[in-house]
Image 1 (cartoon, rainbow, N blue to C red):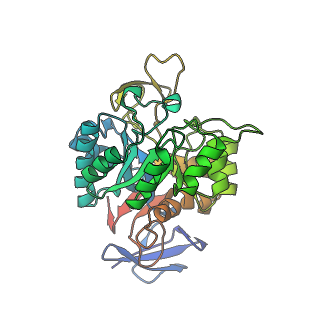
Image 2: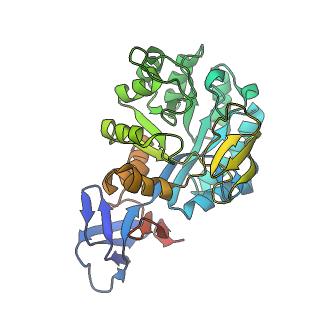
Length: 372
């Protein structure tokens, strides 16, 4: 058994200053306040639960769609930044290519390296395709969905869909019936169309406010529909994709349903230059990723890591550490039905931990009781 003591431990019931955590067999055995039992390993700073990223495309120079090795290496890159569990996100592509990539994801999930896959396409609106390749977008089709789900071998956890495209509501229902999460995103839907998808069982909004219609006083749009429906909402908190005031608003309206994500691409952790996102060419300048040769200067994912998202949430946005931890760990676990497995520092859960210093910089990362 290992006991860590001395850090400020962020638990579902508040911050223990200081606190201690005992770990046995890869799981958290006990949590308490104070100096801890004799023989405890001293740690300092902040002890947080491991981060869960619902939406990430690559990192460390590795695009998840390039090869099985790149997918595994990109996941490992983000693990060093505190993401102990994640869904790998796949861009809209040729269906056979997507099925092949889902096979890679299924193998990784089988090894325990990831939680599964997120399909960001192909059932998206061309008007809000963002960095997706329009040539690969398809009308929602239950047979195509079935083929993708079969290729994922039960590891497809979330599917993004534009609810205004003909046939979408039936496919939303099919996604939910298959045990996956239907997510509204890359959409030009009206408030009413998005609300219909949530009523049909969609329970997540893909990167809220991005790649979806804007809001006005008489046409609230899909973002307001998501907040109004009380579903989970993803946010890319990199200071580029979403204004900090909107992050604060979402945190106030949906504190138990806000999920910080990275939407990170292969350039993350590497630097400016030319990259690919799926089969699209991307240029990164000053950390901002955009489609190459695009006069509209559309963003193409991010170069964010989850530790930076959490740090910004506290230091720039003004959220409490408890709120930031909920958005980075607890809420994503609850969305995926994993509250009894991970996402918090509590007895019985996986010993997935991130030790950060007083400035919320990562010092060490533990997954299933073992320091990386």
